[in-house]
Image 1 (cartoon, one colour):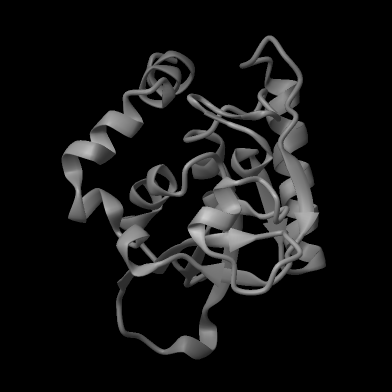
Image 2 (cartoon, helix red, strand yellow):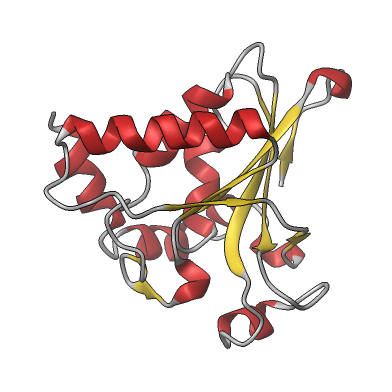
Length: 182
């Protein structure tokens, strides 16, 4: 969980799910205006779930990241642009090798302005023709976010080899195909 000290009064949060939360931290972690990225769980029915409970698929939670950001430096709309580029927005059944509802892609909005921005961004991506399938990423109201256990935080820094294995499970190739070669 990377954090940069600053005046917290001007900060906002975004919650994004896109498969394994390990792979969702690094893309946002070093962007300008990002103050903290936390791996965790949201959208379920159990308070303070454990990793084991969430991966069992019985709590209704989705692995996600909560991003604390300065909207003056990194507007929410720009975060959405980055989000699309690190997920497969055409796969509602999980992401890459991570399958099941707890790995589905979701933008959890915290306000009506975030909802409107997410819906607009999703429609623009659909209209772009970049993908040959419908954009199926869900846009849902935020529910309580529970930080994951400490060993999941900043996983890409703590365990770079295992992180690279996770990334090479289809995500890296998908991003190259759809974003880096266009």
